[in-house]
Amino acid sequence: MRAHRTSWRSSVAAGVAGSALCLLLGVAPAAGATTARQVPAAAPTAETPVGANGQLRVCGTRLCNSRGNPIQLRGMSSHGTQWYPHCLTGGSLDALAQDWKADVLRVSTYVQEGGYETDPKRFTDLANSLVQQATDRGMYVIVDWHMLTPGDPNANLGKARQFFTEIANRNKNKNNIIYEIANEPSGVSWSRVKSYAEQIIPTIRAIDTDAPVLVGTRAWSSFGVSEGADESEVVDNPVRAANIMYTFHFYAYSHRDEYLATLSRAADALPVFVTEFGTQNYAGEGSNDFAMSQRYLDLMASKKISWVNWNFSDDQRSGAVFKTGTCDRNGPWTGTSSLKPAGAWIRDRVRTPDAFPAR
Image (tube, rainbow, N blue to C red; front, side, top):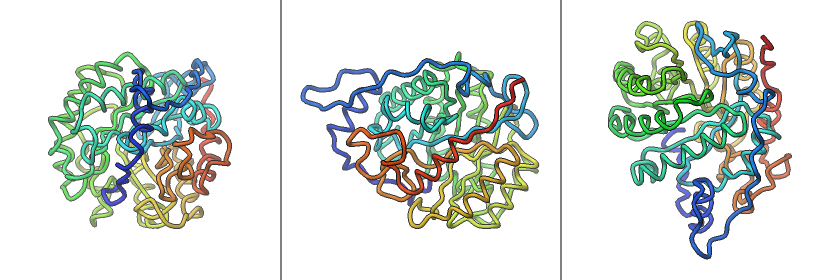
């Protein structure tokens, strides 16, 4: 998510946000706080995405399941957990897993903008709680280090090492975790992004040897297109690590044929995971372009490119799936009555997932 798309909703009612955070962390809320009723998580079964596919790994240019078969994951990204923890309740996550039939949840831990750097323990605990809740529901979970400004991920290298060390130590025995180490690098060369990746990946691998790692590409994870480059810089100088994929982000109203063609070419040469996209403009707002969005989805289906939509919240922008106020009211989470047009459109497409190979 671009810096200028950041929600400034630091005015979320403190009691509601605080109570939701307490519920997520399993901590008793402060006296007088109003808490939402939590729906018990359904036990994961063989019919869940994780039950069907097990430990994922990168094979060639594709994401593959434990049997080596290429698969496509479809799901949703949270908004920044510093602003919208009350959109991530037992009820909403049950709906995501069971009503939406999502394969994957992306947990976005912002580094700046009131996020991780303000209280590392709080945001690490919150990320760990959401990883466990996704696990309980049989979904895969992307732990997103949501760096935006500064655009050079090396500026937060020490913080990233601390965060991923703690996340990996806590979750290394899970078979559903995916690490996204830099959300949207910008204003920085690919060589700098690559250098960062080659420092953080060994930190994770020293603890968790199996999980895929997602590497952000430059120019807001556009393979450089937003800054006049293309995927060739990554193809010609890939990160020196195994079991990794490269991320691509697009917003269909703004990002047209040049971006679509870049994604297509990149996916033929590199393992690609679209960890963020929207049907609106690059700010995640304005009119929806469902026709262009469908062209992207058709391409991603044909090449088995996994994707995650931005975002599972009730932010005031058109790109947030829920109508404003839904999270404060604790739903309703299922069906379409609480969804904006983009939410109803993307729910339909999440609900028609990849037919996972049986063998």
